Image (cartoon, rainbow, N blue to C red; front, side, top):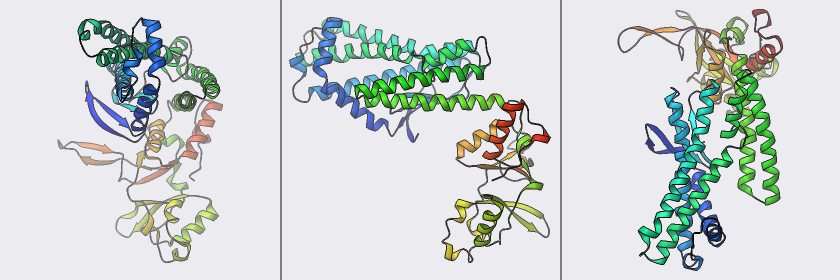
Length: 416
């Protein structure tokens, strides 16, 4: 998500995604257009005695709509803080809390795999939402005593907003407890399943239940012409599939290193920097590779890794000019590298983080740290020892799932 930071709470950065700037006025508009029905609901359900006529004229509905919408998202932030502060208590760092199109997301650096911890973290958010609802109702009940002598617009408007937030926050807690993984209820379900079965298996089962609920929500949204519910259903379905796949891969690669699944340097196709782009394209076609490490054969220093060139780099040059340009002109020198002894999941996460399809595997190089001690650097520098690509990862995943291990004899040899 593309977002920007607006502040922090308890050391946790609070961000706004750009989609939030669209949904906030939308929510304000939707609430403003339903002042009458909502006020009647509050009058019947809470005995609010709101004079609908007083708050239905002029700009008042839009002011109340915006106030209620802001209050709703404040409740969402508090909900996510409930998750985040509980996670921090267990030692899990929180990257940020982001408000976006469908509410809020707390970004965890690492998810707990202990079912008790996940259960506690998952229910913390809905509990906070219920408490916010109770607090809103408490303020709603104080309005007659505090604002009894205020203007009718202020009195009725305050009762409307606070009563609305009381109902909405409790409803938010109930909705989030649906067992639609990865919503809070789905995480509670996974925690309960993980009591008696492996974490990855519990995740797969919770994700399957979540996808069923997503389909049901989507159908309900279609019949009710509710775009927001359809969007939530789509998000739940995609997120459930994504997290289930991530957890499955993490379990499969638990004891697998980059060296186990990479393509060794001896089996790599490389290219020299003075090779023309036209020749590079011909090699890509005949050898069926889309990425090559660029090796400079220096007379004094020997072979040195100086870059990486891909098909997308070559495509930047027009066909008629490809004989005039060399690999050195188009290659990438800002290299993403990893060491052979790193976890395979670290490589996968790094490729996802940078949106790339391969990582160069290098031998660790030594350098002096700030305090003068030697430390290893696995990013940039070092001799090329191999390459790990998404094809290597998917081949290895298939082998692990079918045989339970990756042995040298079954190591994949693809580097496209």
